[in-house]
Image 1 (cartoon, helix red, strand yellow):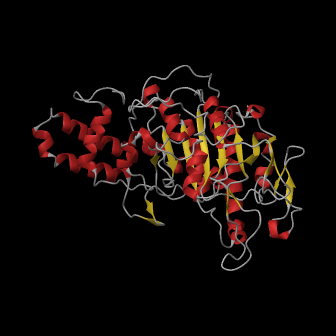
Image 2: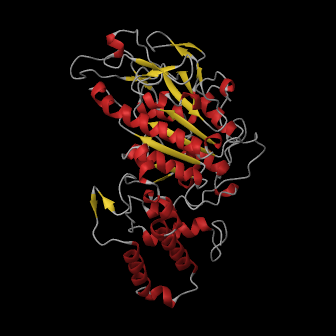
Image 3: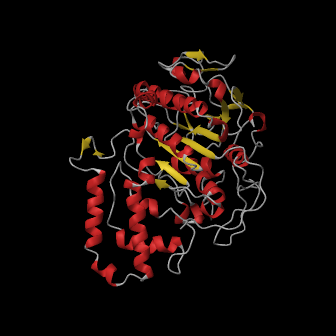
Length: 455
């Protein structure tokens, strides 16, 4: 029976909701996967979807640089700006595309520049985490309605009600919820992402670095059989639709551990060589997991990559974070390309803003960078986006946009269009609200037009 068929006179969505009442206390802790959290996302609501542009992409991998990465220290280096702007990261290096340079801290990504385009003129002017996160992922200023972010919108148009039949939710966050805004907005809980939790760099049976002794698939199956044998109430009322819903919820939960879904999240199935290439850390293994989810047909995956809010000791943190990001991101691009997946997978790298170009040397900052929404960078690859290009330009210190301002609305609208979603079409919703997918009025964060030069 498919995930959309009726169960005992009720929809799967209702069956799951009722089932969760009976399993609310059960969390199946393999790598942090919460069965109840996943099940709540299995059947989002929606309405009919109208005409749309032809899709070039099937999936999006969003590398969300939580906290905001420095544009100067990544994809918009300013080696001549002076020590107060470059600190210890003054050097830039050429890429494999003539005329494009990146910070010297990204040597692996420098060799992949033919696969991605850099936007050096992102702007919205907002310096607060919450508002900037909302603006960057919805293209709208905060107002009376809380609008859904890009992942939730894609799950409306590419999720269950539009034929998605995947074994996991159509919108996945690796690994922690972003927490800075309501991802689903007025669409409601059905469109919130399934946040996996845990750490994909660890074993399925490992918690905080400790492998639980004796916990195997066979033992988990024995526990399930024991639970079923003790269910005298269910045996006495086998036709009760509410109990059928509970049974289905329980079986779906176990599938996250022992079934097809569990296998999908088990990185031990990958060659150790490849895992090492991505980096045996949370970010690197999340990039590998994202590739597996793309192969499984998941439309939208967010890698929530924290640690970039570097008000203090920025350069000490960058010594660790830049090599980690460089390795995981570069290997993801290579792996997707080698498997023939990059042409149908959009990779979107950005944070909610950048960092202040002028370094704060005084205590207590000791060489930190502040929030900076006036000018920052984003990277787009695959799924119809052309590689080997730069869009826009900043000034000599990366403080102001001087050429081709790009607003969040432009970037998101371009992603939607390549996913076959009309940015100016109607957004289906059960509340009956008459809203467009994206605004093109004074509720938007301006618009310089979609990114035609790289589409």
